[in-house]
Amino acid sequence: MRTPPEMPPAIAAWVEADRLLELPAMEAQLSPHAVLRSPLTDAFTFVGRRDVAQVFGAALDLLADIEIEAVTGAGDDWVVHGTNTLGGRNLEEIQWLRLGDDGLIAEVTLFIRPVPVAIALFARIGSRLAARGVLPARAGVAAGSLAPFAALFGGIERFLMPRLGPGGR
Image (cartoon, rainbow, N blue to C red):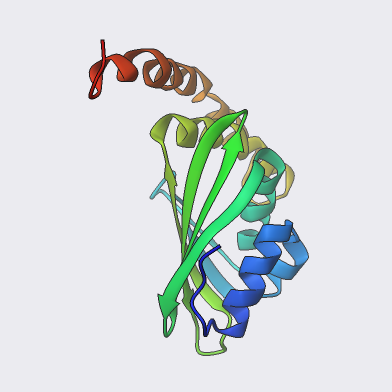
């Protein structure tokens, strides 16, 4: 893993906890009024240490093979690049972390690629967020309705895109 030499303590602790899948240690690095901007919707944000941590907990329930590839940043802005898998399919994540005046993580903005796996994550995470009390139960139903789109985009990615890209047949 590539890391800058002088990471703030909250960032270093967050990265280590993320790498070890230790949700309570991640939660401890969040400001009480932390905000998470979803990679999947602009319809709402998650606010508060507990809710932000529970989003990561729901994701950790679904993702496997989590690797922190690189950390970079300066001052109050830091970026963590991670790779993992969802149902055997590769997924990349960028966490843009912004520190608050208290030295803890005040803002998290997530970016996920590729699109088919991001949609598959969205389709599966809603019910877990509802079970954790972060979203109403109907959010799980709404998110689950994306499962056919996830399958469609996954098929396009596996079967059509290789034929359209450089060297495609």
